[in-house]
Amino acid sequence: MKSFNCLLLPNEKKDVDLQLTRRICRFLKSSRARAFVPEEFCAGLAQESVEVYHPEDEPKLDLILPLGGDGTIIGAIRHLSDLSVPILGINLGDVGFLADVEPDQAEKALAQIMEGHFAMEERILLEGWVEKQQGEEPFYFIAMNDVWINRHMMASMIEMDTFINGHRIDTFMGDGLIICTPTGSTAYNLSAGGPIVAPSARNLVITPLCVHSLNVRSIVTSENDVITVAMGEGKNSRKYPSLLSIDGQKNIWLETGDKIVLRRASRTVSIVKVTEHTFYQTLKRKLF
Image (cartoon, rainbow, N blue to C red; front, side):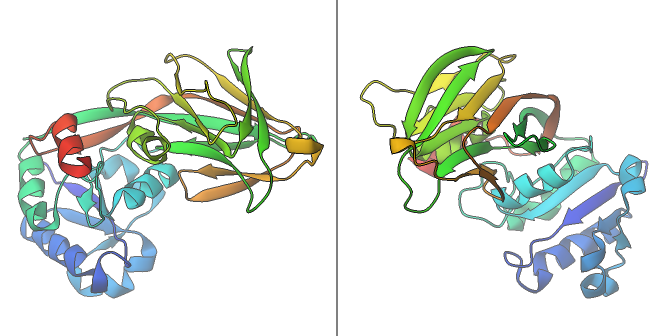
């Protein structure tokens, strides 16, 4: 069997004293596999025979292993969006739609993967950019779950002119707008009353937030649609600033006249599955 190389991405807040990380490092060592970690974790794991991860090591990797909740996995995907390496999440969070394996099953799951007993799910990513009305360079980004446009603090309703493929859909006046992937449909979109979409789908979903209207519903786009949102002046033309939040982990200020362009990214992410639970079984177990 060829050598097995794994990049571990610990979360010190979730994995106290890196106990689970150490356990997995020891298992990998006993299995004659190599464990890579980001440089900032090397000192704390010096006794576990880990190696420092460098970008040039990417072709060697067989698996990326985030240890935390779904947020840890989403952050890893955003920061490593150029890597084409499968991801297995170890769940140290609360809900855990992406993290497929519980901590007490980590070694068993890794053994299955090293023996080739696993399945793969391809998940789409959302890509986009912000075109600033002042003519600055566009800001590009990738999201796994969603992006939200939100009014700032106690500001009045914001105005969002929304287009699909250049055709105006509506001007939403309210608290904001969510644009999510199928993976993100069970996150903020769900809480806002949006639809649950099977993770294998390739659509994006637009869900208005607290819009001042009785007939507004979510919109499910087709896989090749391009969504554009132009920020208007808002209630009483007050031009309040608003925020664009990317996966709830990075925020960008928006002003009147700014445009956000969103579409399905050309690349996907491979999520490793070692359990037999279907998405619908997980949905029932986690949410009902």
